[in-house]
Amino acid sequence: MKMFLINVHLSASNGGIRMKRQLESALLGMLLVSLAACVPMQRGRQEAAAIEVEKIPTPIASVSRADAFLDEGRLVVAGSLRRMHEIKFPGHVDIVLCGPEGLLERKVVTVPRLSSNRKGLMILPFTATFNLVPPPGAKVRIRYHKPLFADEEGLECAWPGRVP
Image (cartoon, rainbow, N blue to C red; front, side, top):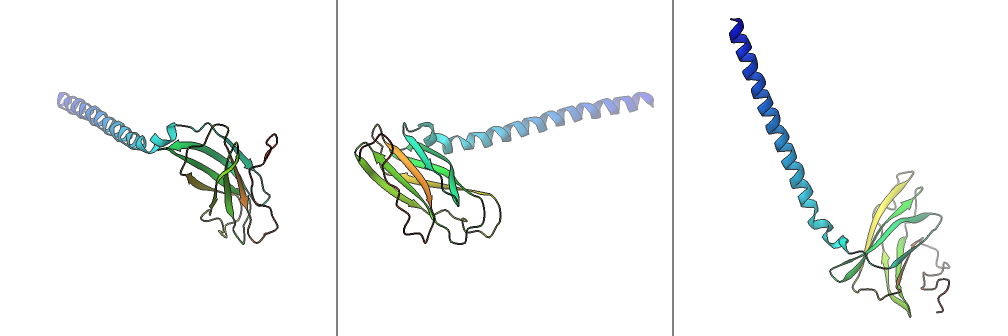
């Protein structure tokens, strides 16, 4: 009787080891498949644009992160807007692409969920696509622009050292 119980215990433990290995293999396979699915999404971001990105701070909300990269012959600017407190009247993000001779293109990006009633810190993503490849020496300037303030000057292509 003791011999039978030992054999049953050993065979059950061997089956448990096999099952554990199968489970580990299945989890590893699922992890590899999910990582492989992410590769095509990152394809366009491989080519970073050799362009300076200037973030201009504002008191209500500020651009906390901004990156420029080339995707299929177009310049893409992606970033995050950091909102510190509730905003009653949401504004937008002004993005200007400046070349050595001046303004190349201007984009106005609305940021979804910016007028949320949620209190406290919110970080919201934004993206803008320019249908051109910037020339050498180009620069991107980004700023949050609050609404209802027409007296606030627009975002231009002037920066220290550049003669307009």
